Amino acid sequence: MSEKNREGKRTARERLAVEREKQKAADKRRRALVVGASVVCVLGLAAVIGVVAANAGRDDREEAAGPVVAPSGALGKDSLVIPVGKESARSTLTIWEDFRCPACKAFEQAYRSTIHELTDAGQLKVEYRLATIIDGGMGGTGSRSAANAAACAQDAGKFTPYHDVLYDNQPPETDDAFAESGKLIELAGKVDGLDTAAFRECVEDGTHDSWVDKSNDAFHRGGFGGTPTVLLDGRNIYQDRTMTPAKLKKTVQEAAKG
Image 1 (cartoon, rainbow, N blue to C red):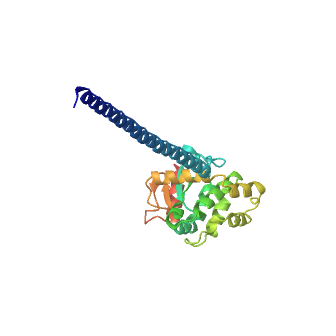
Image 2: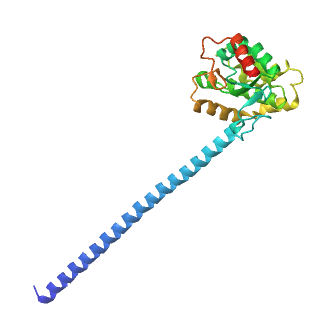
């Protein structure tokens, strides 16, 4: 083979090798671009999904929660206390309760007349604080709806009589009848002057629902065992097996004398 032919073949092989290297480099760049584009798409899609989910979740929570609107005259930290009685009374009875709670009804039936007598006499002030533990345990929204309605009654200056009507008409624990606005409005008819357009709107709109939720959160943060939780000047008297309405009356009256 002539030197000229050998040189031509070598040159052809070199050109082919160069072309192959160029092709490999091009293929490598193409694969890198494809993979990179794929990663960008996945990350972009994830980011979009994350933003949509976050916004949707935030919107849902804000829509569900609504603004915290305390009832008129509410006192204490975060305005979670509905006060009854004279501020000057020397004894304070704090009652955590749930309008669906049978034990709360039993307490009311036993102690109501004594509590009313002592508050009317200016010897006792009561701090009502509302919880919704039956909703959490049994399901439904009756505890929350009834508490909201009681807060609406507080706006109208009718908390105590409506509070008593709710317990007098408490459905069985498994019956979520208080979840119905119509039922709560119907019971308002038993309290003189309560069934008004303002009260109906407050009940139907759930004006104080978020306030009730906040009160229930405070109950759980307090570490209380259940409802009712009844504290006389900070001492749990519901757990005191020797406590009776007569003993409560005597204790409060003695404190009033100084």
